[in-house]
Length: 249
Length: 322
Image (cartoon, rainbow over all chains, first blue to last red; front, side, top):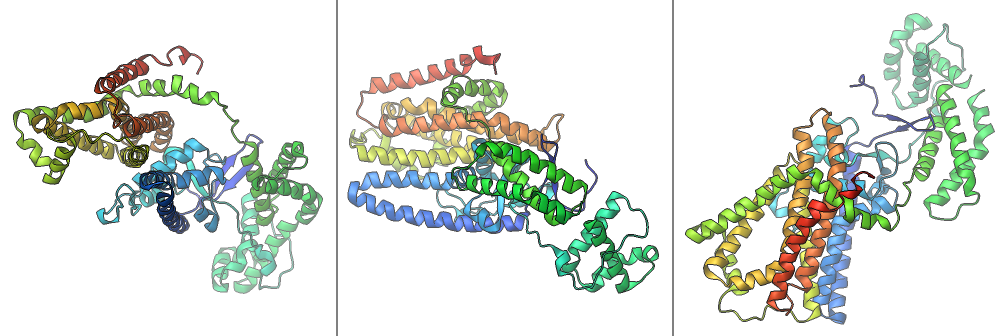
């Protein structure tokens, strides 16, 4: 087991010798994506029912029913697989939430992996309540899926574990916090030599500072007060100045 | 070098790669496609530099997204060609089944033991059946396989056969998928699903044995029986394989054991699904047709013999290559 980390970023080293970072998505955005997908599947079902009515008029009752059953089957079991493979890991719901399914290696999902993870979905959605079952087409409460998401490092449900996939944010929202700082800061060199980790801490502090309240910032820099020689708000400004200096140099 | 200077210097080539990836995403032709791998390698180097020099999150994120995008396009598995389908059924599938012979035998037992037990029990004591089959189900069995019903079950029209085919696809394959998927939950779902099917089918057969027309039942069920029963059992075995990895991961960590089990189970699952599609075709268009009974019986026996031979011998010679 690797040492515990502060964030959920997964770093993967490519054959090119460079590390990429994947940010796995937690249960909540995935639940919204799933809800949107389920609504869309419902729309498909209605459309297929109307098509069935039309077909049975034109080509006979039994042909209409047979076509309808096949379409419902493909929609229910194939919706996720077809979208994930043909749309580069994104069902419409995932696209809406900015999510994407990838292999844990960062590659795109293929037919086999997508098929596995979406069949095991039925196990993830247990328990089913009888009144929620529409004949063979069930909807469940994802008890196992959520439980598995919460105990795995990459928020993987059982289907993800079996198929070796992970749901990640497709695109990072990178707001550059430095441009939105409320404090008036001029970059300044640190008073002593810093290690890489320390430099990184200063840089990230200045990049993310605009998203915290003033009192939180003061609380965070409090341990630095003896080093920087100032207290409270002054200390925050000094720390930001160091961060910006490190970043620009 | 300052981050702004770094960005200025390389922005043109990043934008070029971004444009190429965008075109690829939309499925449009890319100008200078041959340049993409070179741009990718360059942007990999840029990302490594930006990370090492701590150029800040915005720049690193931009390059990170770019590298992932390019990697996903360049890392696509080569298409396996039309031979893949033949190769799958000629060797991959039967070999995967033989590798999993222990879970397959377990699932065979889980189905056939209750099935046989109920037929035997019904023969000596019909009360067993009444405990399981509600009166409506009995009435339905009487209507389908009774002694005094006419041979009107034969479906002559293409339309109704097609409707039944659709029904068998959605009903049987959904059950198949569900038995597989619930097998992942420690194998319990597959055990329950198979046992239930075994008991229920056993009761049905037992009922027809005591008070129905056996000839009709076997004539209808014979042709697709091998495809359908073996398909269900193999699908359940694939699920149990994964469920067992969770219970008994051996020397691997559980997550890794599940991953490995997923790889091993996939060919069994795909093959068994195709068997059930075959079963639905036969059940929809052949079993209910007006073909002579002896032909249906022959097809049924042939199915069992051929599947036995297939699973024992197919793909043995290719074992060294794979």
